[in-house]
Image: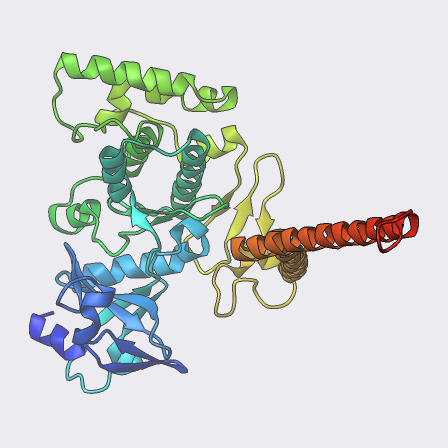
Length: 421
């Protein structure tokens, strides 16, 4: 893929199925992408924003720069596993598109292979680490524990599908903070060709042994960063001096000791700095961690079968056994994860929201009425006070005049008008 071809794609209309999409025009690149070019250059792919009929960002299109056949094999593996069904893996490729099958965009004179995936929300964990260092404040422990749980559940789903991410780092983990709700974690970077795939295709390197996978090693590094976001961890697989290992071990032991008792039993192995700094150490799988903690995780078989949810201590929920169409069918691939009564729950939430708004409106009206009646402006208060003073003075003058007239009448009755008794 050349840059001239990417410029040809900018602003082109593309019909996929029954919907019309448009590649990001060059004049809108600064508002959406934040740069002058309407594409994002990655290590192995070009990423182009795809807008829907309303002009909103719908998908990101990943077009390989090299190794097209290897990219196709990787995309087929990811789409067959249906990783996008997991909430934390919603940014995984949803479909592999070949213009020789679906047609070229309007005005484009070349064919290409691409994958479509959802754009992540929020910011990367690397961005949040810089913000922590800049502001000197970190998130509360309960927020970071929720991120740890979501990361372990996501990597457990990857393990059940037999998929290696091989690029799991702070740049490909996005966190979105929502007010009064738990944070959302999303893993990206699935469009990168992993080093293991390069080795198998080019160098014929044997895969890593069980318990020494790259994903588990980088998962543990992210878990340690969630526990200690204020600590700058050294680069992986680098020789370290003894004076640097001792403070890190002390900080990890303190952070692990502050966890709840159930968490401490499962994540005590993170107190060893070699687990975080070296990939040659054996470590537990994410599935084992979920089972020890009692967390539910999605089982992705990596085939044409429907995914299932595994809850420790209960039977596995298989969606293929349900009658009728598959729960994941339709425009939303995450529908099978929602409860069957999700519409009723949404209706109850809407009714509760309407009642809350009505009560707030009534309370606001009563409060405003009270303010208008008892809290008048200073000018009106001064005018009212002046009116009362004038009224009091007028009453005093009337009283004095009445008393004076009555006294004069009494004198006239006693002494007469001429002053004689």
